Image 1 (cartoon, rainbow, N blue to C red):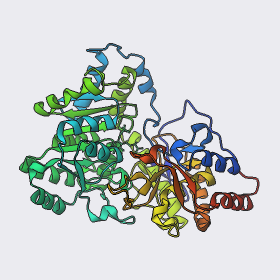
Image 2: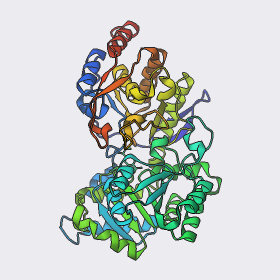
Image 3: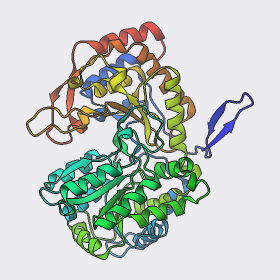
Image 4: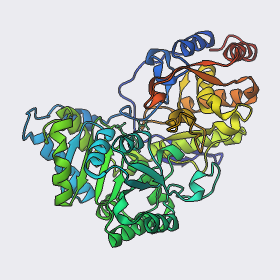
Length: 482
Ligand code: F0G
């Protein structure tokens, strides 16, 4: 993606790709959208894709693939053990991140499972900038706990800090002193910190955390699932890297970490995952679990076709035209919303635009799932499917009480090279309309609440008849328009 200046002086994002295969979309009338939302238990995970207009639930496994990726899939070498595909992928990963060993796993959380099995002991603490839902659930499953040491700026919705995902070095030093290094299973840095709005981590911070971990003998784990966006931000926001090649930035990050893992549903624009390390002991320890939980060590539960696509996708991750599209569209959508007074996370990060549901719906009590309510209302108003990233995505406390999220966000993910600028503008328009009518939105309550990762398939119902009122207002304002 490039930024082009028009004659008027306006800066417009310009796609550096053309679309050669398309999927037809369906925009249902508002009454049917409300009906579908009700049938889905007011949980956007439970909608059927055929009823969704713009799927901004996630970028996971739904980024647009390149022609070279599709071509590579045709030369996959299908064998249970010793497949050439594995060695091709291993070589690309070694060349890109400079790490020695590669363990394949079927997706990001599978890598987290293997790492947690190998490193987490009951009573241990994993320190990290911020948790991700599956990371925390798997560490907890192994008897460990998570402690977040993100800088205070990271938890401010509006900020001008360029790297809100950075670990607070004082908090890191304090935690090491308080807990003692033997109680710490590992320190984890999450690139493009997902749950605080896709906010990046600076190289400066990665270097400093790595230095401390090495000095103390603590393992540093790096979650690279959202590294593509993070690479873009290091290059564009960190002066030192302005003229540094993306591959050299990627290699330096690899060299600073002990364990480097990723969801290839995100990084590499395919479907799979992997763990890299140069440490022979760690490699041996984690390797045992691969055949047990994933598959043989040369495929790890993945299709070889996906592994070929991933190899090409990883190479394309160091192409600025490929990785800039999401951050630039996130900036475009956030900018359109800010211009209309809608509160969003700033500065815009990667992954998607994050609407501040807490402020958008400050009339809804937090225990009525503010972000989930706004997310359902957005679908009714637009057919756009976002993802709740607030209290509903948290696990309850041990005593059964609600664990209130630090931020109530609705994430509108922007998968790489999938949407057009007019679709972005449409999304902004409908959300701005909703903002003007926000008093109509009410809360939600559970009808069916799963005990683990409840946001995936929990079912809810509205408190009052607000969806009906919203549909009425929509018709009044938009007439026959969809
Ligand atoms: N780590 C991060 C930072 C992630 O964003 C994800 C997935 C994972 C790990 C787990 O990877 O899905 O392949 O098992 N994030 C997706 C999302 C689900 O929509 O943000 P996975």
